[in-house]
Length: 447
Image (cartoon, rainbow, N blue to C red; front, top):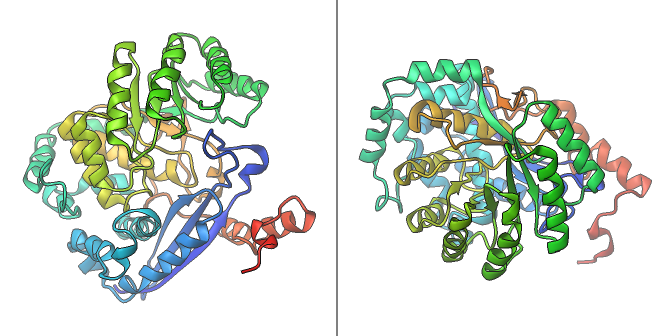
């Protein structure tokens, strides 16, 4: 089958109106995505996306269009039989690579296309992506990964050995996953723009629904951070887990001092305490906080497998937070899982944005069945907003992600959602603009 068409749309949700998703760095996000649909000449389709937070989504959309010529006309059998080579062709196009390489807007666009291809492949096989991966023989799975730049840490041969060593017990782990699900934690209680009363009511709601792990945003004033941490800790109790997330706002020494001040609340980790590119800064923070029992979690803004490699080599992350869109889609995320396996660092995926929970559940379930063999010390972030817009959203019951059963990558948006939320012409955006509740910054700018 040949891919005959690629479309990409700018889909946005006005979450900034109620401070959903807000943190110390991103005070007014409008959760969004560049949404890609691939079509084959005989009718098969694949759906993929890259998460964004509003302005700039149009840039990612344009980058997808710039890459489209590398996809349209290609035979799916040829792509999937040598996926690593195809992935490299997307990331190494001789002119487009100059505006990366393998990072930023171009890599976000790559992820949207690659995620759509995995969705298509899984649909062709009639399986959810996690099951597609779990059923692959080790040689086929490893053939999807481009090991360039990471062979000093993990080679194809080592990756094959990891998978072969975990063949025993796969069926039992898969059965346990299907029956019990995968542990989740919630961030929905802790957005920085939420008033304290709302945080309180949400904590009570999620405790009642069975959650035992909670993450809140920090990075405002120290007094405010202490006030929020104290309230949430008192609400959830000391037997439940508390994590905090600074979203990159601190310098290194500032991060250390701020977390010393919050140590009394026993946070499991501090997430993104400083610049997401600062490996040595994260290492310094990790060393300083280790005696306090606080780990460092990062990765949602790591631009590619090479940066993950350096974080892992340096011992600068205690929790590896892969993101399904920040790096180049499933293929590159798998490379990070193998490196995390090598360094014995648990992967706890970043999720919560449009489609992220839907995608990372597949990746983490693959890891449990085929690679790590354990859920101990591992957990998937959960945020239950925008999920109603997907045909097959992630299902979380009693703080457990239930294994998806529908074919694909769980990235198929409802047609009504696409029509109503396309920016700026969808009904939702037209009504907001006409009512005066929304005004694009571009309205006041002449170019």
